[in-house]
Length: 485
Image (cartoon, rainbow, N blue to C red; front, side):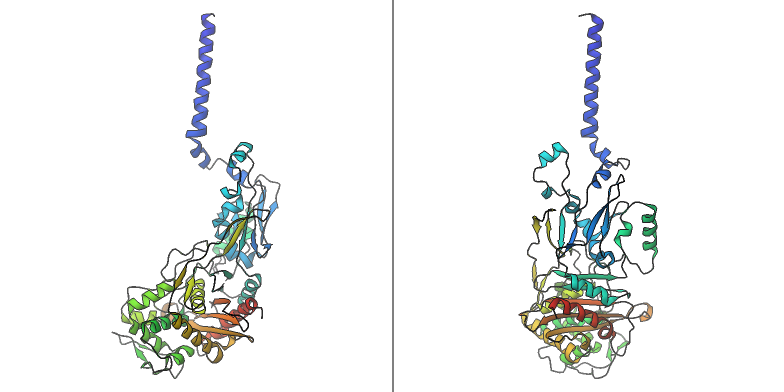
């Protein structure tokens, strides 16, 4: 072989080796960097080349996909978008995803390994797996009743099945239509700007991401602490509570909205929401006892997910006696989400047991085959069963004869607690109207639903405790639908 031919052959072989080395460098060594490069649109284009799986309420999807015939082909659609926005969140080609669209993205987008029975074959064929479905625990009628009840007012509703922890309703108003954020057009950008600049904050999930002073609804927790600690042993005995009550170590005098709270029994104080009695009870229980009870109910827990994250409800653990007195009536630094207060009502309804709430019943393949189901939820014994029994009686009295009569349902036993929470500089803000409750139909063996309602801009009448007037009717309608009444 001629020398120049050998040289040409060697040079070509060297070029071939260089090409192979470079190909390995690009495809193996630098693959991660290229995949993460914002200029690489392959993954984004592939992501939207097939319809996204659906989120279901019952057997009906509340989401869909629209073929745009564009490069990012399939765009997310929503049915009754404002109704379910606090659950679905949005899936946007421009702004990412939130809530269930985010936490269940693997299933919905088809990238979850459970959706790929033969991963090696799929790797060879490059065929993507079809998106799966997410079946929620929501009760459609309860969701609609909560949304209808809030109407155009700011507020939120959370409803739970006490015996399981299933979330039956999760509503936040004002709401928005997630479909406005689905695409990547100029209209999408305009909608994003408008929603983020809206002072009413329609994209804020008030049911799980907003905390409020719970006001008198927190007296359920204080009563549980007092009964468990033995500070109160007889519901009808005098509590030796002055009216007004001077906060320990201060000259500040705490008063009540109504009369008849001096030395009132726990039964009377609970029915008529006496601040002085419960402030004193909190001090008598002590900071440690109040903290332990509050945390057993779920306060100060930063790990709650349903499956998306829930803002932690708080009970201040470093308080003096005056601050403890205010904390014990749901003021000072005590803050709670509506979901947390629904958990409080659920624990009373289920004999003192509390189950972590959850929103996803199961995930399935597009054809309906189950991929994963909800695991049994951890159970915490929040209070003694005897304490829960006594609290059920106290909450029932509130609805039968106290401030919560607007929540009564014919054919059912209902327990509740009203609340009017002060806020703002010098308590100048319009009080939040609260109501928490549980319901049990006459033919049922146990309560089937626990509800918490907060209305931010209620027509508050401070003399009548607005939780009974503004929030209780909403809770009643939600309970009525769940109970089939």
